Image (cartoon, rainbow, N blue to C red; front, side, top):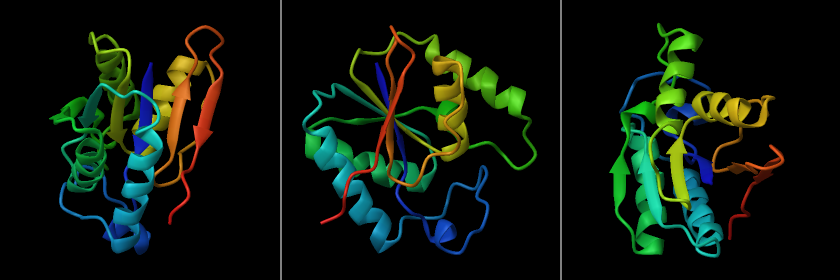
Length: 154
């Protein structure tokens, strides 16, 4: 099962600016605290593999998680956020290609709200909408039920 993690708050999230394929906006102090809370929550879940979008905000979140779990971050371009000029079907195609990969059973995928929403929607048969920053979602493969939680900070 994939645990889908939306990156912590970025400097552009803080000012409500769309990021798209812009790789650069880093995490804010709040975003780093959110990443630490996610890492703590995931430390209780037997995670074996950490994937991350190439965007800095996802890489920074994933690195906090990986450091806490004693794992390495594997960069996966298929997890990139929807580009401002990119179509939704193109992102859906990327998600299908990601889901076709043979990933370890307990994989964390650190990505973006739109990409996660589409992935979870494909797996569950219904979209949960865009998740909040630093939220964790999973879909039970047997029941297609969505579980979502937002770890508390501090």
